[in-house]
Image 1: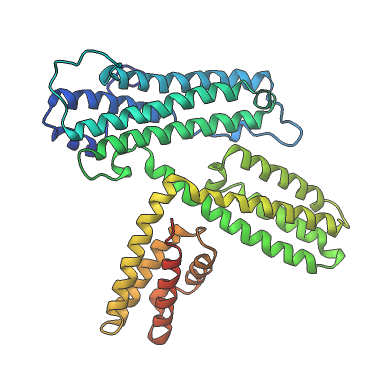
Image 2 (image 1 turned 30 degrees about the horizontal axis):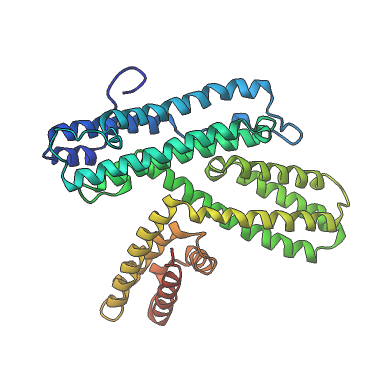
Length: 383
């Protein structure tokens, strides 16, 4: 139910699966759990951190932030506990040695669904305990960024686990995709894809900046600092920046502040700027860990498979209908842009085809691009 006491709707695909379950009592219980799960995910939506962000020297959590965060922490725990209660009310875990129920045994698919619900519930319960332990840590209590990071990570982790609960239990009754059964999944994937692409561009910009600074004359150092400052300001206005983890935003804000100091300093020392950018480049490389997110792994497998099929279709058409082959390869190239940031070599190719679209190629150039694309996609297929 939602906050007004109304039943929360579930997805059309889940309704379809439940309609096909012969045991109508079981289907009704499962629907009740799904409704609570949908409501819980809606209430655990992503936090907009912008209004909580601080500048350098304002890191302490402070009483005012705790007053704002306390209701959110309380509601987070309450929302997840409501889902756990719904699961255990509808599908209690049998106690060891308890007398067997007189109800008819569940079929194999229903048993798999219930096992999935119980496994996900156990993980959620552990995460609630972990959240309680983390928010009592002095390192969290005394630092607003750590507090925001804990809350953001916990709510994201809860959404992911509830998504797994929905997906794994529904998959017991038929083929489903996460997008069909997990609310907000499309937005989660889109956010991760945007972050990955932004990280790839940031790494490219910083690496190029390091080389330019190394070769810069002393009188040009301030200009390079100002250029980096503008680049960081541009990044801060992107949707990808808003979706970053709190601790990563903190590092970007600190770097922006240090760059800003040098940008406003005539005769800024070259060694200091170079050291600063090299250090931040190492940090930015750690942001590539976004590739390990579960939502991206599933997404990338689907995109990779679709690209591979389109590339093979282009290869089949290459001799008989080159324009159609070019169109098929262009379609694969457009789809592969969603993989940008996954593999450095593939990234170079994807940037090239933005400047010179595959659909415009022909003859030997088309064949060469097809073979290169096929090789790059094959090398990026390890997940």
